[in-house]
Image (cartoon, rainbow, N blue to C red; front, side, top):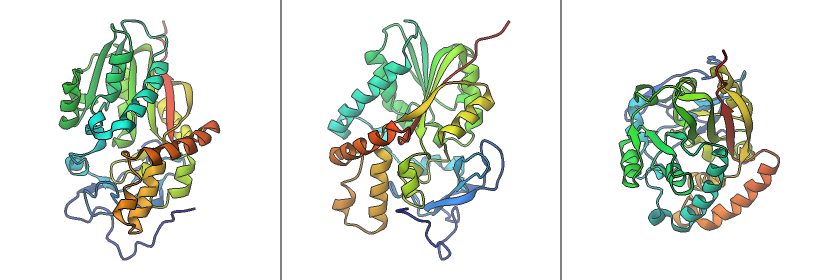
Length: 331
């Protein structure tokens, strides 16, 4: 394994910094608190806080979760103004933006296959509205598109693109029950404190027979296996609180009542690139070398896209892509 858990006996425990309030938690799937440490790391990407964080894995269901994790009152601290989901624009990311837009537009159209021309679609945790904009540009003109995000900065960016996005949490957003044909949860479930409650809220918002798509980081990937001790990009310390493999994500979804339609993986170079970046940064490599591995660097992203495409052939891609359905109402 490239990255192992270091000796942290001379380091402060996670959460002791006065700058960050932390809370202890349990496995979001089975409720146990017997998780064993699998990774210890820092906020390598944004350096928002000096704390060290511990990722543990539940021995029963396999979920990996941050414990302790930042309190929800600390969100404005751990999500800085330059967070990539707030400012993913062609001006900022150039060629990388164009490639991602092309690739993601193909995925989005597959998720929407068979929807009616007047379908109602909700993107939960939509960020700056990247995927909503794809639906607007490439989808049916009669689709009713809505987004929801907690962060004011993300909502402002989405509205600048002419998108209908509401700021707030799903449980307080006053959205109409049983009215959506498709709900997207793209790179969002890993950020929330209570993923089961989130899925339950989404279940109630969908029409009977409605479709639900989850995309999230995959702890069943080769990149996790190699870098899990400290540097894995999917940890995204301290912003990713719950991390899944295919089995655990389907199990949680079924607890809520969803029926799986298709569960697999998808190609993404991001965790590979950030794992290398985190390793180099931690080893004190010069900034010019560290900065060769980021969302702004087409060469490293292209190389690891090929690497992850090979892994995806055997269902070990870096991201999970799970499609679920709310059962039809029974009479």
